Image (cartoon, rainbow, N blue to C red; front, side, top):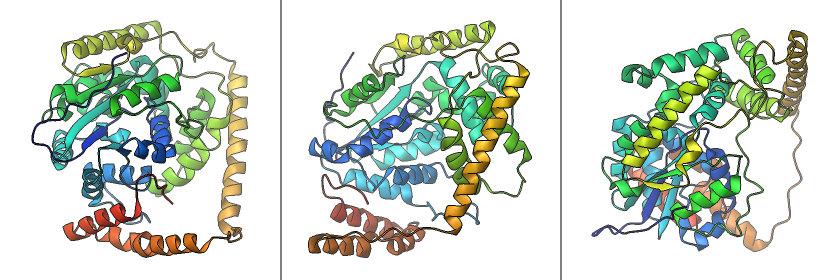
Length: 421
């Protein structure tokens, strides 16, 4: 395995900023949870995380990608969030990391804006890449978890049909975030090619190996880091995904996506359905497996020809055998599939009823005892970054002076090693 490097470009005064741009479904949730869980340990090694939590990185990504925000969405506006986060990263001493897997979905203009906003420092781009055959079922599940209604076979046919045409690739979400060579070309136009790091995701779900490869790029010691709080992105079995797809078909069109994301995706899909045992998942047919293998070989050849920094083994990108029983007409009797979906439906209704009860009749926890010093710290936090202050500042963050003020507040509050609230 090759190791990272930190060659400073001449004339650069700012920190070394690592942009982890994804791709989705490549262990990004695990890596982000591990980063935030070990924030103090990483800060002691000179690696800082701008913002107060991974939500700040998500909001900045939405701002950069110009994601529309419906007027009904109760979330604060995210206009200006990228400049705030970039400003905080540039105020870090040593190294900083920004991580959001949907940065891979940026347009060329958006990627250029991101890179240029950080060029006062030394910019590195990090991409995690995975076996394409394993990506496909995961992306179909994600499409369903984002209110999709297309079945597995039809969805996969659309992905394969879009492959040969560049214009159709750009309109396909799956290709938009997994057309690896095009993504890397887009993000590397204003930085040296050896500042682009491609981390291959190991097979066999080896989270520790992925963490070590990621650490080699960012330049920290992975030994001693707590990985117990880092969750892997939740996946669904075929019965659970099919049940959710049918729910999506039945949902009234008037339900906004922000509500769906909070109540259906987070509570139902991630909280209930992903906890069920998976008996089967979607699988590729032999011809589809051969097609995925061709895509993998083209990617491997392209990465070998590029001058990017490869961390891991390119052989990890070749499709492996099926990890779960194949889904298909003979995978399980129709009565068994119907029973599994009915069981998933019962658990879903129970979970949503419990969610409704807790929201309608919340239980207030007792106030914990705090020392005088802690009370002073809490007051300072509330004055500079309490909920109301944060809301006011976010709503005014389209103004450059407010962005600079938020960067200063972060520098005051987030001393090296301090945990977010």
